[in-house]
Image (cartoon, rainbow, N blue to C red; front, side, top):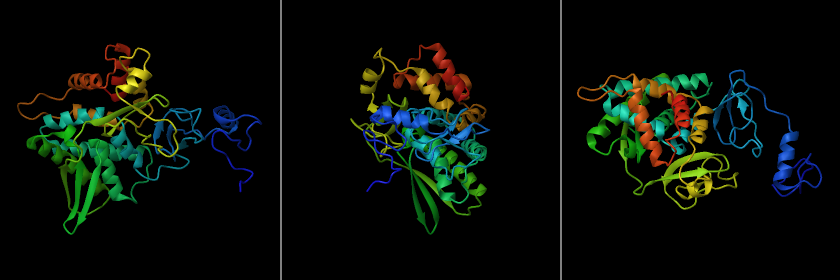
Length: 337
């Protein structure tokens, strides 16, 4: 039995929908008839459905405004209840910033100090976004590790304490043992710093674990203009943010490139820059700390110029148009380079 106020799926009628209007047109009319969301004085919002966090002027989804029935929630009205969004960025967004951080750690005189700086940046970002994280200390530590490393984290709780296993993180953080040790020192020091801030007194350890053998999957969704990087490359995937709600499927590269760009050769850097523009700016805090770190003896410093060069190389592996000087400058600005 249907209630009078029940909203049907696309193709049916919904309460308040003009008669005879169905499908996408009816959905659009219904959304336009609904009241707008509450404006955030700080311009900080989050979505209760996809768990994304946005920095923008108005309470309108920046990715699918004509299709999403949710309004982004002002953090002053109702703050985010967990650090879930930071995990989703680390797991699913292109791992461009993480690749730069890994390079900085490989050059740093003190990887531990750099990891602690990343943790302090993480805590500062949580405070800025009014994230209610103290009730879930383990999830918060995991979120720090996932966001910073770009990879999923398994947790083992034993009588000796907590052990975190970074799954496939050696793809960015070092395949050889000396590099792994430096990365482990940085990430573990940061995790311990977050634990201290949470007043969690537990011994922690961290290791790398190989799980996947094939190349990491890279995808593009032309509907929301979002790039994804996660798991193993597959011919078909569902949206990693709203797998049960979104009917569109991200396409794997290079198929997405051939079908999504009229030139059929490169992606527009402006699409990527937009993702960083509306996201929390923790990536800027971390890259600033990385660029300011002291290099180890005999190693070249990690400067803004070095970061820009490494970024351009990584963008080319994604088939972005690095010859677009304006787009490249905009992306560097969003990253704080």
